[in-house]
Image 1 (cartoon, rainbow, N blue to C red):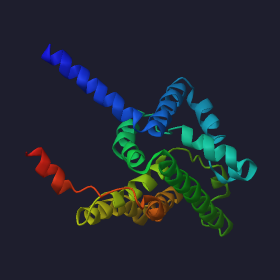
Image 2 (cartoon, rainbow, N blue to C red; image 1 turned 90 degrees about the horizontal axis):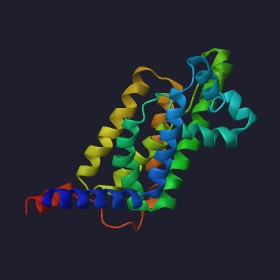
Image 3 (spheres, rainbow, N blue to C red; image 1 turned 45 degrees about the vertical axis):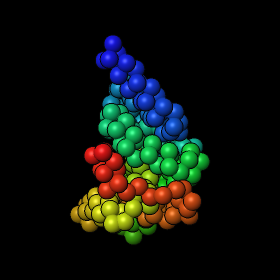
Length: 221
């Protein structure tokens, strides 16, 4: 009976956690179904299908609102489970802390602004001959810009001095690829981090910052 009771308590706690971050888990559910759909497509059809929902220069010039929305509903890697973990660790925490509307504002700001600025940079590179003209149709979908922005805004959730270690880790994670490969997506990810940090006005009045030291002390009794 103790094991059954423990399982029930665990399930209730998990359900309560999911309910506390509805936007995160609705989005994650959409990504689950779209990922399943991708697995039932042939490779050629999948590439063409995703390109039409991509925030590349060609599609942005035709229907920017549509592709900015649809591009955030697909995962180009086809692997949903890692995103389930990342959404639980970062998005759910941010939504629980900021509230759904403020969390969504951070996601939208990072996704939209980083997309538009990075694609503009790519357009300039094409114009100046630093990138081929075919890059206007580059496949660019996914949820990583919003994730990077949320990871960055969570910096303000952590109390100093732990905050600075976390921020250094986030910067290193996104700055190293930018310094080594210098693709427009790496540039977009780094921009997303800056945009997330720029969302500081949204975090004011959201309660005391989390102190890992206090949490460890409480666990030790």
